[in-house]
Image (cartoon, rainbow, N blue to C red; front, side):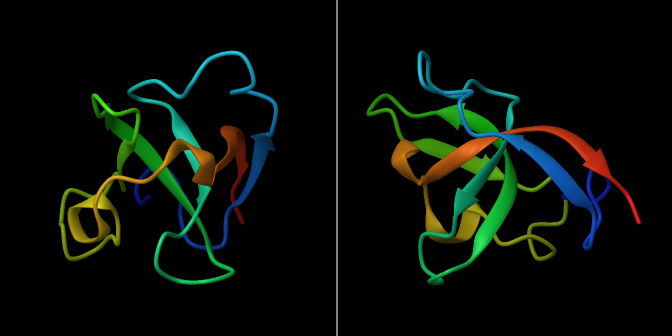
Length: 90
């Protein structure tokens, strides 16, 4: 998520953010990685697909610098753990 978030930044996540409505484009979310077990990722919702899945990307414009939906495809909304509301840089 460089330049918005750097590796090692701590983030504050609201796990209740999406109880009443789904994530929207532009939101930064914490989600479980779709292909790597026990791994969490912080990504921006680039678009919401017609089937409700989320296309998530890192903020780095270099597609090789971020593992995101450009590699693994859109993710199910159930993978989202919450909305990132703040960061604490180190």
